[in-house]
Image (cartoon, rainbow, N blue to C red; front, side, top):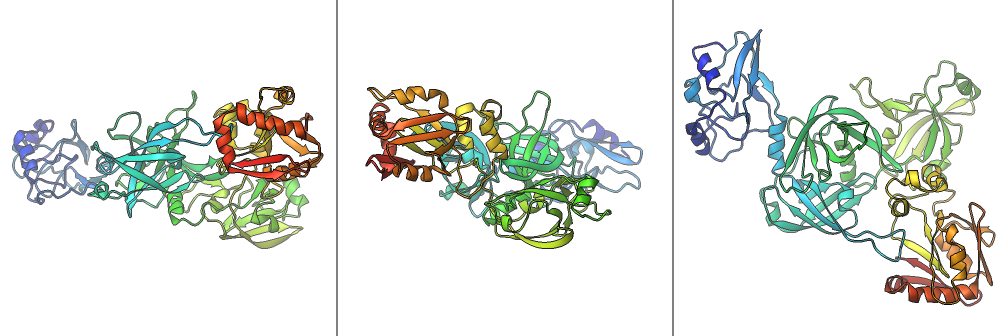
Length: 602
């Protein structure tokens, strides 16, 4: 530090006087060099009382053109000015540094530094805590609902009286209340829009009081660079106080948001915990680069959190029907022999082989098995199935589904492919993903035949029956259906025998005999394959005396239709009001023998 006041500046760097605090309280201070919210000292560049400092912009390090010293000491090291902030980064009073003191370094330009935590603290004042009461359908006992649960999350304003959060925070919500930072009052909120596939939701609050002086969080629409500093703002744990954690962007990649939708994610090393979900992740200027939504929990991996990037948020806000789905699966195609067998030129290094086309997707009429996809929308496809992430980001490649994930259903993508020894240009219309085993099904539905309860196989059913880690504990055939199951038609369902309900009296023999078949997958009824519950209900209505159910592993259950009808009535009595209330919404049919067949959509 050079100049007559250098020693005084160094000596007074770690202290603050009551006089300087008083000056800040009076509304006079320097905002060009303060490192925190408490502005101290006087400056020739005085601000108006009550005006906010520019917390989102760069701050000078070293010297202030207004004539005061920024909080902390500066020392001369080589030809650079290094700034050392003491404690909470309070400013140094001019009484210690000398009126008009300036830190000088010969031939050194004033450096600028971004203050991510300062910006995060300011934005944090506008970040909202959510209190959510939810009650979800039971897909295991579909005539009932699950127990009421309570949770918390985070949201933030994005303009037009809207709050943005994660879909999983408000899923199945019956009551949502919101609380502003530093306040005790809670306001009722409503879910306006919800996307499970993008894990995003929009809320609104009807009370005008809630929106007074609440400022929207601005977005940064560009992807952050690797190692760029970010801050996560939210309300983890049980505390109502805002929490800010800081880290860096570790990776940008594709990840499965649901079993059937793969989208771009940011991986960061800042802490993301329960309650952070839905909170903004801010860059150094205080703009939002994404929404915190999950973390990896593993004994072998530490500090891995995931963020929904802004481009996915923008796609959700565009509200054009969700994420585009191409409806094909591919095989990496590096083998020179395999490539030559399809007639690809020897010098052609691009392309992947189509191994499956979804019969329910629009692409079924456009793509064929053994097509080699060379380019999509002008972007070359590597033989490993990856594409460049973005211009100017060398070394970063992602799954080719990224190109479709940026589009919407009914958008048209330009494909260049190789088929039957020649190149083709194809226009492929994107659709909506519709997996054989849905992860977010509609209302719970079931079919009751005697004491047998048939339900569609869904991920909520598997989670309810086998837990969140159903991939490990569920029967292998069910897991295969989730991972590799393929629809033959848009309305196809996998039907499972969910329960064999017992009742008092003479009609329990069938239920007792089939307990070992519960949770088995139905193959056919009376020798005819069935595609879904409605088709099974129609087949039952036209059946004779014997009802024969054949299952995938060879088991067979045969019911007498008259006995099954009596059993059904007893089940209704024994199981109590819950199943009777569900049957108030029953679609009834009559079998050929005159017995009622009940098909229920709860």
